[in-house]
Image (tube, rainbow, N blue to C red; front, top):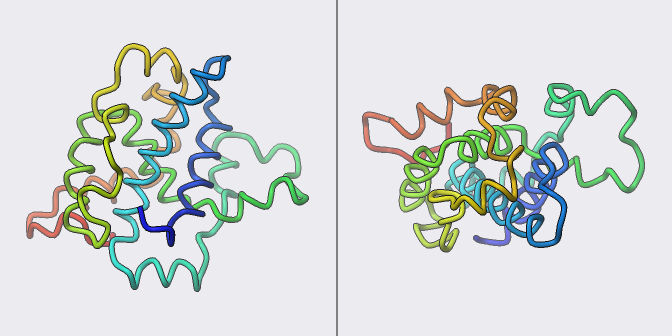
Length: 177
């Protein structure tokens, strides 16, 4: 994945892991992080499919985690200070789309296939097998992160836009929504 989307991908991954923590243990954390990162990478590439989109992201900023925090109840206490600065790099749509992909492996496979229509290219996420064909071990490592009911409120924020993007009848399956 081009480095121009790295801050948004890293922030989305971190937000997902903080909102839906993995099971205890280093291996579980690594497996959950791989799944969240693949979902965030695919979502970011679809959300910002061109070089111009990525440049506009840098100019305007991603928006932050405020609404996501509100939906999950994380805004109950103030998230201020340097330790929370990463939250300014969270893109709500990227996180919502990543939640959709984590909750539905078939949708994740379709989304990964659509990357070929972006400037990032089909190989930009590497092998996203943990996302598209999760093993029982992947599910055990991240039961909250893969649970459709728990992810529902976040996924529902922008699910229709993602579904519309992936099923565009004109064949422009990876243009910006």
